Structures are given as structure tokens and as C-alpha cells.
Length: 402
Image (tube, rainbow, N blue to C red):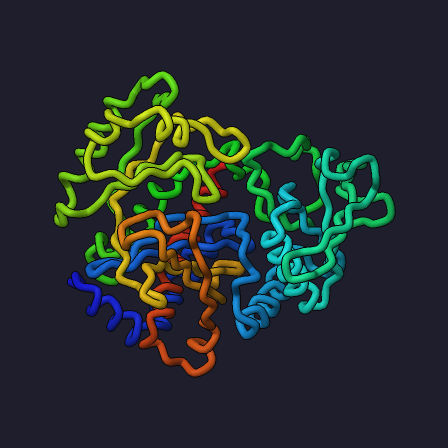
């Protein structure tokens, strides 16, 4: 039985091909997202994904070598999904004032163009165009981005002067895009039916547990090495305080199951994104005693999504550091293959806190080297496997809504 981190790392080192072949075989059964990113915490005794982004931002934080690897992977994947595709449109978020997000769009567009495809940016959101057909923007790093007004005609997504073979959705739909997706004939990847108007973190982690249990059975691994303990609470209203007693009891229950009694507990809005709707507590008593300001922060998230279902999750204390700051890893995947990554560090937080918050900085690192020189002793290889398992769970999610 593999029941230590060291033994798990040894498994990845010695059975890299077998491990990834098993994941490949499982992924072939499910519609895994065309791209995704996974936030991973590494503590003294486990590796655990703590978030999975189906419509990832942050490709600007991926190193140039890994961007090339992503480009090759997009070329193969798009050709498989839509043979002969030439013209691609990226449908982004409407937060056009976020200049770093625009950097991400510019790099994502470049990655796909470098695969030999034409790339446009489009939006159905009339409010960003000020009555015009096009919106011209300048990103933080001075990249020019043009967004064209999208229209739906005879089931096809197009602009006034272009048709598209495929749409890549980069909008998490925490604010629903007003399109009758059931009538759309243009292929849209990942499916728009798995945005935050529908998706639940709780569901993702239930599927991830199922994936890890199957994987662990195959390779004789202790499953807790690869996941954080969690539970779910429904019917909470932070405004009226309804359900806070249930939430407090759930916090104490998860805490009681964790061997490390100093561990914190993360309470997350099940439809939360952008690091919003997250609180870190020691006990259920802290939930009961929340002041109004803290309750207001937990009540609604991005685009005013109200959090009534909560994920209560074991806090995984990070042992990773960058410039003496606590850090965590994010892995980027295309077609379920780990191809890039960065570290998110935050000097304003401690090793048990939510690092996806004010004060965070990013450190690029290249993981393409683990494929080029086959040195699978690197931690990046372990992170890649964990991220692939989380993305397989995302495939379970997508299959459920299709």
C-alpha cells in the first residue's frame, strides 16, 4: 500500500507511462474539457486539488516553452473535435477593464493562432460595445485586442463579416449569457451548459473522490494522499443567518475527521469563482459568531451569485514557498494533458490561508521539460498527474449535463 507522499512520488517516477496510460484510457470515456486549470496544494502529507477552472484565465502566466506545447496540443485537439477547422472565435468574459485578463486573452489567442488557425474575439454582451460593432482594447502588456459583436443566425454563431468553425468559451457564465444554446449548431467548447449558473464545486469534488478511489484501487494507493476531506451544506443564508448552525456543525465534523487538529477549514461558496466567497476558520463557533461584514462577503460572489450551498473543505497547509512567501501550484491542461503552470504566492497571507486574494504574485515555471528529458523525478510530474485526475472528474461533470 502506497501511504506516504514519498512512496507516491516514487510511483510516478517508476510507473509514469502506466499511470498516464490509465488516465488516458479513462479520459477516452468522458468529454474532458478542451482546456482547464487546476489549483493544487502540497502539504507535508498530501497533494490535493482545491479548485478546478473549466474556463481558465491566466495563460499569460505560462512560460513561452509551455505556450508552444499548448499550441501543438490545441492543433491536435481542435482537428480531432472539428476536422478541417480553420476559423476559431474565443468568447471571453465581459470584464474588459481587467487589463491582466486582457493579457491572458492576447496570449490565449496567440497560442491558438500559432497552431495555424485564424482567431477572433466575440461577445454577445451588447453593453460593452456602446452601440458599435467592434470594441478595441489595449491590455496591460500593450497587446491590441479587438472584440466583435456576435450574432446567432440559423443556429450559427457569427459576426457581421465572419463565420466560425468552432467557438472556444472563456466565460464562466456566473452571469448567464442570454443565448439559447440548445439551438446553436456551431461547436462550442467547453460546453456552455457547465457554467457557474449550473455548476457546483461540491459536485466536482464528489466526482474527484470517485476518480481518486478508482485510481487508488488500480495502483494500491491510500486515497487521502490525493484529496482534501470535505462535506456539503445546503440552505444557508448569510444575510438572515439561516442555516449557520448547520454550517458550523459541518465545520466541526470535518475538523474532527482530520488527523492534524491545527488544520484550518475552508468554507467556499459552491458556485464561487475568482477567489470570492471563501472564508477560513478554526471551528464552527467562528461561523456562528461572524459579524455582518464577514457575512456580507460570504453572501454573494461574482456577478451577484448568492451562495446558499457551501463546500466545507479541509484546509491543506501549503509547504511550498516562493521568495519566503507561501505558494500553491496551478497547472494548465489542454485536452486533459498537463502542459504548463505557475506558482501563486502571497506575502500577505500565511501557509493556511486563501492565497487567491489581494497581494498575490505569480512565478512562471516550465513543465514541458518533463516530457522532453523524461526526468519524472520532478514535482511537476506529480502535479501534472493530480491535475489530470481532477480534469477527469470535470469530464464526469460535463457528461452529466450533456
